[in-house]
Length: 204
View (cartoon, one colour):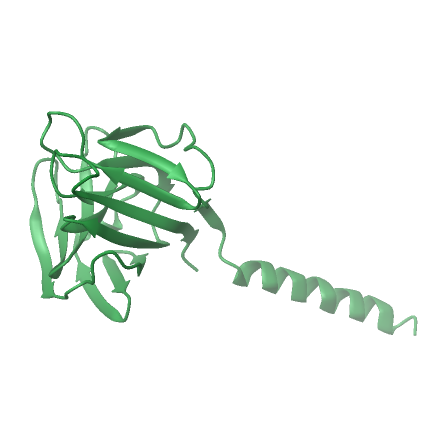
């Protein structure tokens, strides 16, 4: 028995360490049950976090779709959430940014008619990497899963998977934004964007 105890202890320790390595670390998880934290530091339009849903719509005179930005450092990671297009909303998007002097890095656009991926190799430059017809039902929840591995981004929207590759995708991201086009400056009476169940984990 004395000989077995050290071996058993070593086995348990190794098993615990292996389990810890297997579980990806959670970088961010949002339930949207409470008001947004200060890490949601910038935005356009009107946003509210309530009852498990983040809702945004265009407001004011500036003609730009709603956008809400969260600070978060990541490179290889997995991003998941649900989204839906309400009323006359035409697309939802997730955009990833570098430092202020760098600007946007990569942008996934999930439109009611098609999917698109834009890379931004340098500030102010936009390159279309992917476009595919993919109708989305309005006013219904859809699920998106984004995985970053080096210079490649794989996006799965419901049961459709797309892949885009560009050197800039491998850059460190310092923030991301949820937004899109909600239907116009008339506000939520014409359309809105909604997100829920946001979770970001470090890639294994």
